[in-house]
Amino acid sequence: MNKAEVLKEIIEQRRSIFPKDYTDAEISQEILDEILNSATFAPNHKRTKPWRFKIFKGEEKAKLASEMQAIYKASQPEQLFLEKKYNDIGFKINKADAVVSIVVSFSGMVPEWEEIAAVSMAVQNMYLTCSANGIGCYWSSPKIVDHLKESLIIEENQKCLGLFYLGTLG
Image (tube, rainbow, N blue to C red; front, side, top):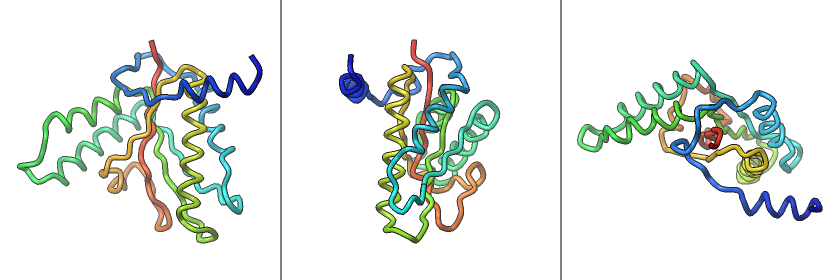
């Protein structure tokens, strides 16, 4: 198979695969590094490299799950609070082997949409690298990520665009 055929196959196989379908096996640090490194090859105007990624694993991941559940509980009027949604937030994070926060850092040098687009292309590179390595992943952008202050140190010129869940497949 030539490079173009391999690339076409990886692109066609790219899917969002959700934590319920992940196994409990760990993703090697080598593959996690490869996934994040592939993101850095995304095109970005004026070389602003607007992406900021943070990997959550183990105890940090459990803390992220608790923080997101607390944000959901605090931000929902009592009559709209759903126990199932509250539990799902914790389940998805805890079931994933790793969760990566996706943050855009606006440089002020180019239009904001260009930096959001660059971050999106970086995430697409991560998706494709996951697909090539048989890793399940998906990008989630729940409204509550706007309130993730404790786990993410968000600066004035930054915005969290969501979380990228990763897990092994059976």
